[in-house]
Image (tube, rainbow, N blue to C red; front, side, top):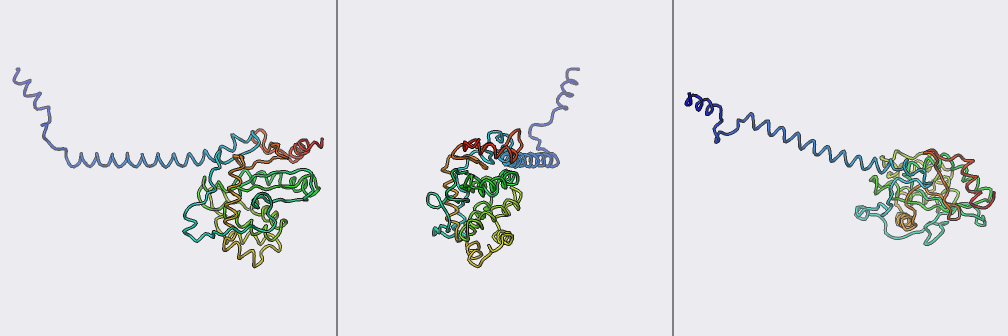
Length: 287
């Protein structure tokens, strides 16, 4: 009986030196491939999540009054590939630029008693929300002499989202400013009205920017087309973006009246034109 038990036990064991079958090896290999594919998908999903978080943070920070697509605006989004692609290096400051080293664009009457500082990035979708809701209000306050507007423009979303749309649009805006402050303002408004989805680098196309310029009467001169095509104001755009980075403002849009922050969103909704106007007048001591 003991011998029979021993025989049964031995028969139930697989010899230690027996190699796995080819079918068994293929199963292991297939499982490893699946695991590797799952790992790569998890990494890709994490990268996508980080982008979504960077964009979704606008809803979380909206109540602070200065909404942002990126908490850190370090770097202007310019890559070393630009130089390799023949990016111009000579700094040409457009006519009508103001502020330190010509990095500010001032719109309105020079003797206006108050200054509204507007910090924006042309690829920022929340900036478009601000412009579509209160852009006309800003224009009204400027045209009636209550304020003049200092535009401080950024390009950090190129770094956050990839591409070159922010700085290409900013360079084109320099060409518009060179034609006149009114031409700048009209082109500025056209760009926001035609802003592509934030993950689409639509403003990275010079031809698209030239097409949009046709919506501004008298803007598309030979000089403007040449400056946009040759990216004459790209070094100036980089300087403007760097000035934004050094401003201490960490997100766009941010609006201040004589240095006092203006709330742009309440309960995750843009403030109304009436609310915006009331804040500006209160900060200016007009009510």
